[in-house]
Length: 110
Length: 114
Image 1 (cartoon, rainbow over the protein chains, first blue to last red):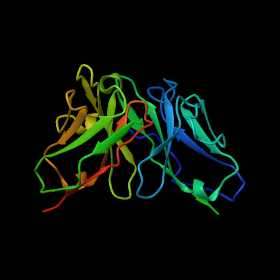
Image 2 (cartoon, rainbow over the protein chains, first blue to last red):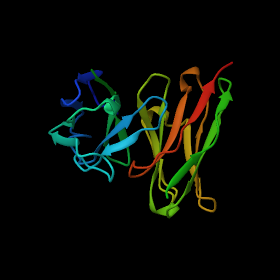
Image 3 (spheres, each protein chain N blue to C red):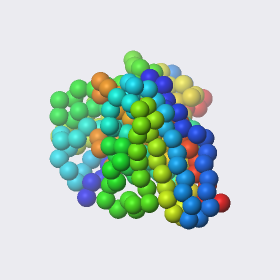
């Protein structure tokens, strides 16, 4: 069960958009519509931003959106704001009551 | 409101075991699975395992198979994660997280040091 692959870093200026990819296999990302995305600020617990590929929990701004194509899921943050600077992780169900996380992406707001 | 409150920081010697607790409140304890996730210093999130508080059945990632045990006490709405044969590289913050991933504990730092 290998970690899902994410780019180590991504950046954008305030107001711009940034998209983070999360690549897995047909046994995890490609096999289930159970991809979630989390935002983590330093020293804090992760916060759920997207679940079931594209659904937003209550209270998450609609600037955050998710999608999936084959074995790759993506998180797009539109209208970047300073408070969006954080680490972002994806996760996917991998069958048999198991989950796997992505390697993480540090988003910098320039 | 849903709360997951974890036990305090631990310092353990290599080879020892540690047991971290996660006390749940604000919802029906047996209705939602509970995950355990860890994060080594400066590293990413790593899923360790999951328990169904209703039946007690568990599933673990292969990496920790044989070293991790997740249990629950329905009388106190508490889930436990025990990691044995600790190594220096087990130094990490350990989190419990509700099955929908929308609620997380505050994290418990486990330091393995001689």
